[in-house]
Length: 331
Image (cartoon, rainbow, N blue to C red):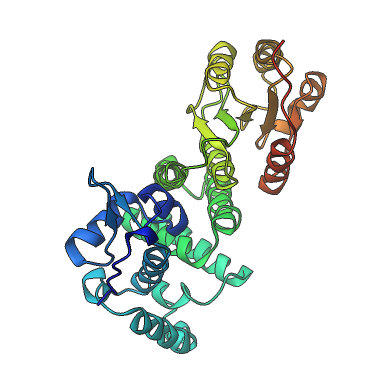
């Protein structure tokens, strides 16, 4: 049974913080609490939930145990020691299980190396081939337990969508397979981005794609990554003209605007839009541009002083650098 704590002072984390730290959606946390008594949060006079450090640790343990294939109803009331013992037994049994069947439950706890990422990628691709939405959702959810947030995005989600796109262009997959896979990943990234509750003092970032840039997964990846770096992120969806992007940046007081460019590599109207956006933003707002075809627009990006990024590590580095710079005061 969960240990009851009489001191309410230990309950200091709102559910948004708990969701960010555990990777569990707020609705799921509340369901585990109400239906199964997994944790016992404190309550304010207005009945708002607050959780302790021990609650967060317990929810992390429960998430790992559930990822091995056990139902929450079976494990919710086990002690912390019993949960840890279950995970130890899974780790000991993992090599035998992998050799026998290589099931998702067995490899989910085996580590964060490249072989594990390849295993997830291969199974995700197989699920996409079969149009098995539930299997793909389950694999991504389990990968989110096996990997850190950064590694999940960089080693699983981004390579998965790149391979899906390559197979589609090669004719191995039909558009319907690409659409299904994109919908599942888009939903997961949206939940990941939405689970963050940064500090109110954190800088603001606006993320979108310009007009005629239909594919938004790159922008969603950037939004989720920036949120993980502690930024307050406003994700606007795809295909916005310069005036709307600039209006959003002005309203939010954004320190930076991030754009994703994926196709085509030779749109003259996009060149004009980028120049106009730079003028509308003014000099105090940093413009960050990435995506598959961003190098094709390197000339205009250099002209307007935009930061061109070639991957998520470079994006994170630029965001860290921007946080350390005191913004200029408005004239």
